[in-house]
Length: 342
Ligand SMILES: [Mn+2]
Image 1: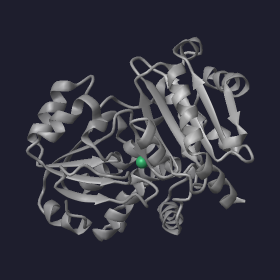
Image 2: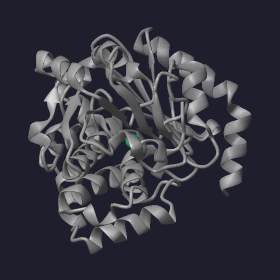
Image 3: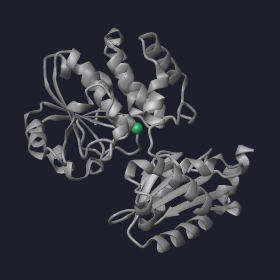
Image 4: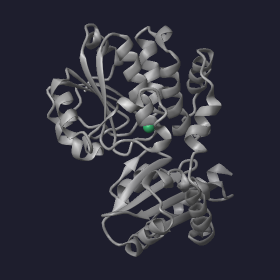
């Protein structure tokens, strides 16, 4: 796979039929980077279609042109036709085709040249071009860099700015994670100089929950959060019954894993939820404790150094047992990472 984004520029010198896609369960970075790139490439004279494996949560539907996104789970034939016609395929915010679930074989077998722009570790070898930079805060930041490297900063309009801001804001935890570089702040300054107003975007994405989500949050923080001070760790595990009782959907649990990290001396937090056919897990850490390796070693997952995900095929109680054993295996390292932060 070629690494330089400049390799992409000859590919888009003449008008192309472009499909832009992202991972299953799109978040603000996946959708924001896709729509930001969509607006940019459309301005450059290309015919673009954004394809989502399974749509988007309600709190992202305000994004400019979000209503044009084709959803594979609802518009299967249109999506297959679009992929067949495409000359270029941009794959954003994911590293392995399997992250798009049932859409994966159609993407892998597409005749189009496949371009990855992503910030997760260990990209698939089957992309033809692109950039994979785990040091970047977000795919939205990478799209911003791409537009600048193309010499097109002046083309960034309010639509593009709103889309790209959304992803960089959410993927940096509102500009507090270690990936929040000077470049991120310079990017936001540039978007604001182009007319972006941040507050309504924070409100649309972060202050847009239903009452049930806050009641659920209160319940799990009070009743379900377990602290393991000897490991500087915390876990919240919720069953299918509890999720059903509070009518909790996938998007509603986003970010809950971060709460235990606000406790003094907790440097590693895990959120486990029992979904239809599997146990899903999110891991977050502060400092040097590498949750990408932890997820990889114990729970068929991975992601970033301080934020990753995993899954388990055994029962919820079995999963918690494995987790506790894993904590014990990592006891020394957790203690050292905690001490390094003091
Ligand atoms: Mn991302």
